[in-house]
Image (cartoon, rainbow, N blue to C red; front, side, top):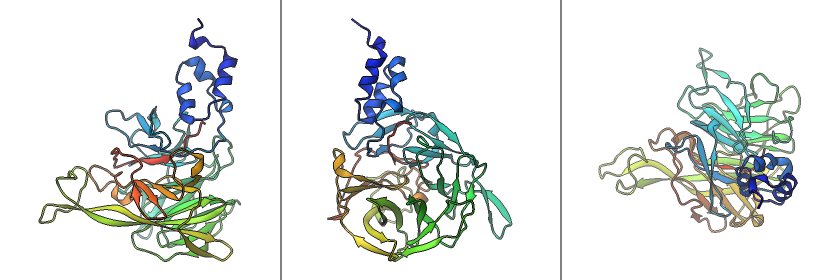
Length: 387
């Protein structure tokens, strides 16, 4: 009988080319060296659409590995990612953008292949009438809020990486070959989210103002206002493309009062009242969705996403066709904890405010039954793609 590790290479190639599920592909490559040698992206149908996995928070007893939860089958895949150890991670097109808190180091990291692209250190910016310069990571605020790739680095070297960074949520970009980051001309709004759409970057700020930048040329132009939503204090705004149109999603929160016997103080930090309860926490109340008409410069509320499901959080906001995947519900919003200002404030970290929002009846159900908390990198959505 032939040893499974000595199977003919051509036969192994035929087998791996029939694999559709990314988790099966990743498992195939871990069997032995000969199987790993044929588990390349050229032998895998990487063009198939993928539903994001939930990358869980780093665990103290195994901080070089991360666990990924699949919504389709409920399975958890464990993967060694030493490059993400102790780092803040955001995601775009299956790549992690990592930054170590307290340092300027930032990189692009592919979580499943280990390929890493070193990026220039984060830039300095002036404060207090140019009296001081400090790195964006100087304050306890999370330095990288979001990151968006214009194209997948696995497929091309012609791409732009745009990040929202710093205490004041500036936009900065980097192209392969650049020795430093380029800051986009600032304006008064603080950027909440950004998307690459039809060759331009569109952003929404914390007041609901939608701006567009054309960065295709060598000289960066000023932003132009596309539309203005009614601003709401303390709401989070997301912007994304879905079925060829631009959408803005507004996430609204409510505060909660937790009983000390139900939630330990190690998980929720806040002020104790006279009855011994703990305050200063939050949860998602609802989402509002608006379709953006770029020609008319207006936003139209909608409660019908059709066959689409949205995935929101510190990742690049995305839309998928729900009926292509088992267990994914159409007209639902899958969200992770994205209250950045609370990450370092709560001793046990964040990650409790996650769930699935039904846009039709405004109900919220859990999508992950476990508890996964972190002060640096709570769970985020990662689209599983081979490099």
